[in-house]
Length: 207
Image 1 (cartoon, rainbow, N blue to C red):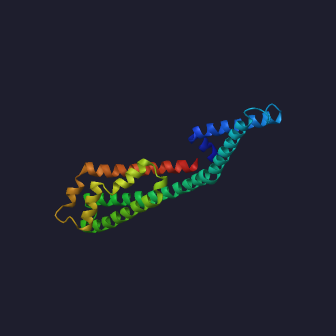
Image 2 (cartoon, rainbow, N blue to C red; image 1 turned 90 degrees about the vertical axis):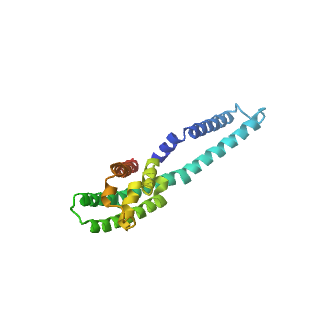
Image 3 (cartoon, rainbow, N blue to C red; image 1 turned 30 degrees about the vertical axis):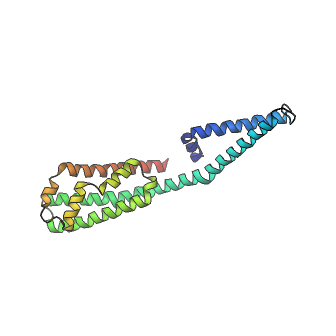
């Protein structure tokens, strides 16, 4: 019943049309049953044609709800739960580790070379997670989530830190990259959006 009520809310026009079709069938059969409408009535064939159309439309709607809409909604709810776990465990967690290592470099708690090697692994894991997230869970991700996840691959700060960690920017000091507060804040803002949207997916799955 939960999925049927969702269908009614999200397909109001179709629901009204089907309701009118069912009402017409009831009225037609009642009139035929009480003798008000007989085969000798002038527009009987037209009424019967409309009845056939209404019956076909109602049957098609029932078939769609039972065999397409409900299974799809159930599948999406399950996928949302897995998408939430994936984004939290693979994306957000890796970003938390990355953030800690960046702060470790700034506070001189970590050796720069060793930290960059670890950051390189972080960035690789993040790129793989982003690709997997888009490839597997895009059908159930919100537009904001998709923008945030996809935007990671095109984020300037993430690009610079990952390239530095790979050893491709030898002439650029890590401090120069980390001094870009605007770029860094933009990246962390994407992560916050991902966290928020993941929480929203959990709420949707519990409804």
